[in-house]
Image (cartoon, rainbow, N blue to C red):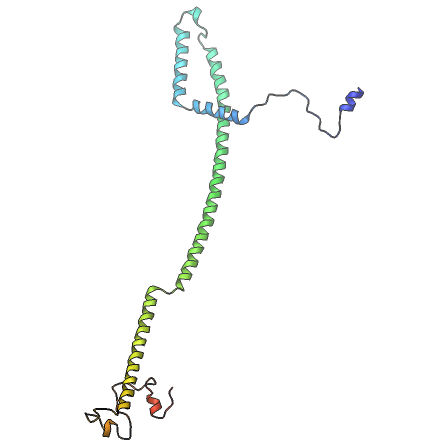
Length: 217
């Protein structure tokens, strides 16, 4: 008695007492039940069961009386079919529950993927909008062409004005040769000492305002 009390410890849980049922693998049993349910849901099972029942009826009806193991009312056949129905219903329900669990897991996975795809789509939409805004501020090919054409025109106009100014300075240095050919005044100069007119507008590039005594604007 003292040894039994010494072996009992209060800091450890007591082992359960009673009948211990055998343990089995639920996953293996579930796969086995699904296999049976799939087999019972096929046309082969119906055909085979029909053939067996027909043979059962034929043997217990047409065979000699001493060889009949289940005579009419077929009590034993009724018992077999009842047992089959009793086990078939839970097996089918178990298979359906497992299929429902798989469908729920697949549905959750599809929902998770849909959420990820939605987030990716929104991110790509924001990136595309940012790219469109950025491209709106970038110079396009047509804009560059127009700016280069305008700069080329300005450079051509500046070159023409420079050539006219150099021509006028060279004519002034040599004393205006050919001044009497259609030019007004002596020596090819205008009355009052002015320079001969050129077929060009008056602007600040050639120093027209400076020669007239006006500051260039």
